[in-house]
Image (cartoon, rainbow, N blue to C red; front, top):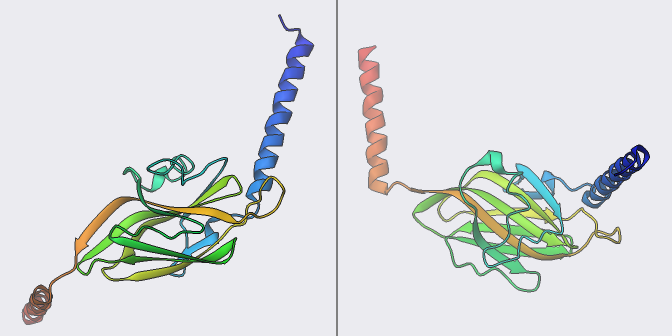
Length: 208
């Protein structure tokens, strides 16, 4: 049976370890925030960071680093949309095509293109980077990408590795959920819609 002194010592040790771990995590995350990745000129809606997490891992990627952090933004299951190692590009086999360029190993640009000519897309889009044994994820909530549209963005890494340096990225993984596809109106349908709205306007004026 532990004595009172032993219990107090164990409690103090646990508290100090917790404080040290929190301080270490804070030092690692540094200035990283939702503003580090942009799309269409806008910063991400939310940011999640995890030590020892690689979103690129596994056949379907690993969403454990941001599942709970982004839970309040939607309810659907995350899908792996595409991923790329630093020295190889994206596969681009779906409706959304991605590109990534690096200015340095810690900064660069990226883009997403809706390749459909007839379907607009709205989704929760996550851009995730693995660097220095750590992972960061940026959420673009209810992101609209119109048919044939390309959205350009920027990215940067601001957290540090175990040596206290900002690491070069090793891979990028893209996830999506709550995907909604909406057909764009055919020209004839659009003309009928405009005509119908015009008729309603004339009737409204006549009543007045």
